[in-house]
Image (cartoon, rainbow, N blue to C red; front, side):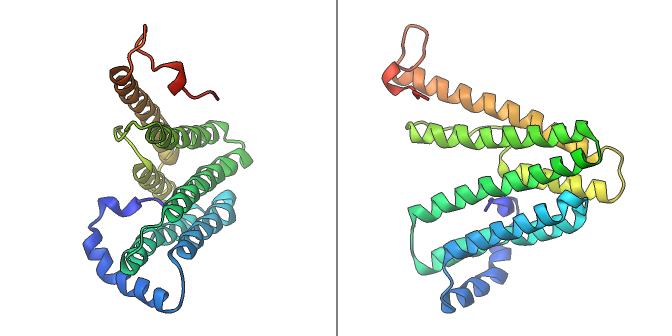
Length: 219
């Protein structure tokens, strides 16, 4: 799950959740199981409620599900393990959750024939996935792309704020937030591509500053 609580004091929250993590370990529950359970909770909130316009209920369920991000991390620390598969699973579940959240909002707006906010939600989904992909692909090629105006935590907090604005009846509140998130994500994609381009050019400058064909992605 997302590091959505990275902007909050983890130490304060950990005092509450660490005992929960310890109890789950004693019960034989694995960190990976908690990761999957959190994603299932997001799916329930998004697909079960957001698609029908119950955005506040969906927001509550999704927010509670995001606490599993801290719980599974605490469980791994208490067990003293570093599991590469667990990291892969966590990232994969993030992509599933993102698709469910923004896809559900797009579905809801499309179902009531509000195509402009539906398009904003789909653009948020697309650009958010690309933001994460560029960073992951860059790291796979040996570069770094830890730059950008907005990452997944900010996108989730933003859509949460938009949901609250919608719930309080603020006209166009959620739609404006989504267009803003999409715009910031596009800027972030450009920032990350530019950063990697600079690193690639410094590592192996070609005639146009591009990396050599041997290092390029054939896809």
